[in-house]
Length: 468
Image 1 (cartoon, rainbow, N blue to C red):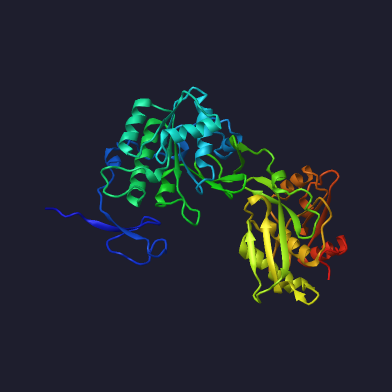
Image 2: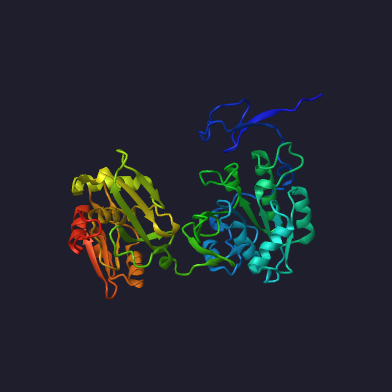
């Protein structure tokens, strides 16, 4: 009797080893190997018939314009590069409850209204649960077909019978192939099921959406080959307890990866936000100590984000640092540069002895260096009890020697700030020459962080609320 062969597979990256290992040599994670039966190569690969082609010069290759199907959701169409391409495969990831199923159900309804058949495969919920969500979102359509199924063979049968233009799998981790002796969600099942679905979509010119679970660090669970198989990878970002969601493309074979979409979650589902800057600015707080406005570049779009900071004397001896929506290392860097080059002290306290909390308002993630000057300004503003005048924006990258360096897309940043009524914009001196001056707007240039802090001190007198 022939014995089954076993291999050890890393559940993080899909690396296979003939023996158990404590640390994966591929991804470096510990205790991620699990024993699985060795399987034969996918029958999908065996059934493929390669076209007989010969190598030709690239100059002789005929380019094609891919017809696109509009989803009628402006932010989603923008991220996808202008709509959906027939035969494309899109992987959508994000935290549980962030809105993945909601957005795709809304999108499916919009496309179904264009007389196209849609098959929504709910592998985690019953058809009754999906119907309840559809009624809440007002997305019921006779062209939208739903089924609760996890068997890949049965899903393929439904696709063959229905001949839909778009298929949504919610989620890929629950789909399994009966001929693979492992549980749904394992590396083998996810990899083989996804490969077969992708081949089905390419062969039948079907638009395929795959919803993927995420790990604790926010990356899509399963093997990295899952992201290599698909044409587009979209990530939902944001706090599930906040109303705003960011949809970002990290891979797109039919469009740019520099786009980002902003949605608002409400009772009727996800709504596209046309002017997101106003949602990331809290009303009436930008002219108080501890607040600075930064025109941040998120994708190809400039959004005005409010950076807030709070400093308070440490209680437990070791200063506390808490950061939300910002890069912790950059905030720590700004604190060190402020102390070293600006020598900030108030009463008996130095800046480095304070508990410091920093936050980007609205749940948005800001990690670009151009926000350095705004982060430093917000920290210094709260520590010194000084404030910027109302409608002032700050732009610039701060170096270790205290210099403020130029940033990219300076005109886009300045124009967006001026459009929203900001009349005073502080920019790096390196960018000052190339700025197209907006009407009724004053652009001030700074070369060092020390100049910026002196400018902050000159703007207003200390407040009485926390003054020493």
